[in-house]
Length: 93
Image (cartoon, rainbow, N blue to C red; front, side, top):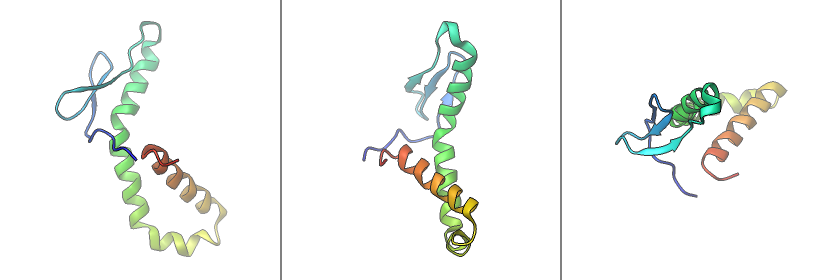
C-alpha cells in the first residue's frame, strides 16, 4: 500500500491541487469543463480531510456499530460503505 500526499490540500483559482508545501499534486482545469473542474478540485482538495474524518467516526463508533449492526440493515450498509471507501482511498480494494 502506498501512502497519499499528506493534507491539508488546497485548490487554487486555476484548479491546481497543492499540498501543504504548495507543491502541485493534481490539476483539474479543462477549458471546456470549468464548472466540473471547480467541483472536482474542491472534492479532491477535501479528500484527506474527509478520509481522516471518516476514519475517526468509524473508530469512535466501533462499539456502537457492533451493537446496532446485527439489527439494522441500513446501519450495516453504511458501515460497509464507509469501510470500502477507506480501503479504496488507501489503495487496498
